[in-house]
Length: 550
Image (cartoon, rainbow, N blue to C red; front, side, top):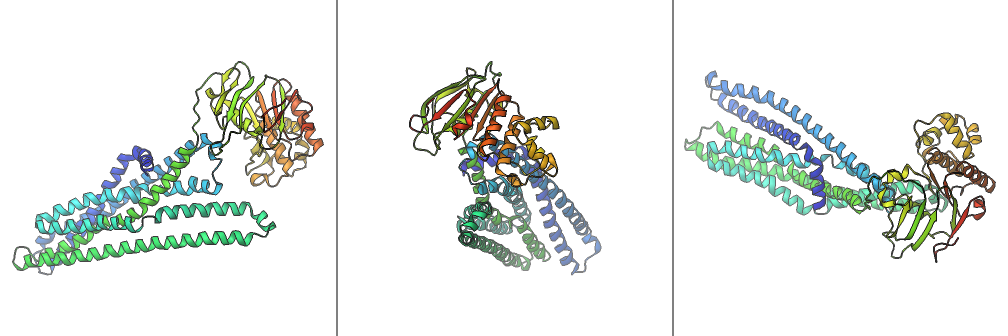
């Protein structure tokens, strides 16, 4: 939790003065409430004795002042506090996505999409309350308590001790008790909500398969079990919250009773005017407005700390790729020199002492059995992962010196499972180059053998393709991804299983067109089918035993 606390403090530190300003107005608001009740009590109690109006003038002015100032201070306090809250929320969102982006996709390889969505949206949003409901209440409660002790000490030290003891019980004792009885509630609630998100996304994405294998009822039962457990924890949290409110009410009433027991003898002896009994008791009741939120603060503290820890964990666990900015290499030769690599979760190296050189302008096909490490070479080349042994050179420059952004400007990759965004055909193509003209789109679509299909679409490039391109066939999605990468026009093009959803004739035609277009540039094609690669200069056969044969 120490890391989570440090992370939160670092994120909210730039708004420290704003938080103090909001806390100051919060103090003035509650101070006005106390002043309003105490002066009102004085007027009512004093007026019962039928005094001269002159004796009530100061109190009447005080009621007007505190009544108006309370509303004004509350408005300004809310304005500043919500300004700080939204600034913190915006900073959290930007920080999380900025920290997450360089770690994708390798750093997110073992994350569930539903859980990741929960962290990126709900967990970040949960932390927007870090000021309003966690930092602000103590910042207001402490000066209000000091104010009450000073006010009551003007009447008697005994009264000050009573109010101080009561506020300590309410502001420290009840929150401490809350922390004890709600030890795991916040953490379990956050984890269960995350699990619900993961199950929801996984179930919705796999619904066709669940229907196909008649497992819908099983998935529903699993979801329902987690949902029931979540409801049980939420009820426990509600019970703790209800107990907090009850304890606050009991302590408030007990304080009033004890004050009466202490004050009444002084009134009977003539040491204190009787009207001040109402002033002191109502003032004490008003002071509890400052400490009432503190038990809820304690209840939320662990929940927010665990939420912050979840965000911190995903950032800390993800691999950090160090790089420096270097000039563009003089050539685009690629060389793997005695490379070894092991995934963080793997106990055995995927391959070791692997060497391969691909000259600039060479057309190379890589084939072999599944699991031999073909796609891993692409991940290493793009620095989604870094090698665990040996090195990779790009134009005699170690790959570690290039950032992922620099590599993306030199290497175009069509991944094995390309992602298409919910939008139009043109939107997905212009993801590579937002300023591309329609003529340029036509050119790359012809190269990917997609142009004829576009002519049959109802709105051409403006045709909506649905989420993940569900309105297109598998082959059309693959060719759209190829066209998008061709639009980048990079010196090196890597295609990972680019024709897996295409029939053999179309696959060969697409590869032939791409080979022609890239005849003077480097082309690397990874495929299971050797016959698709007959137009290439070299065929490299990957073998799980020795990693490479040529």
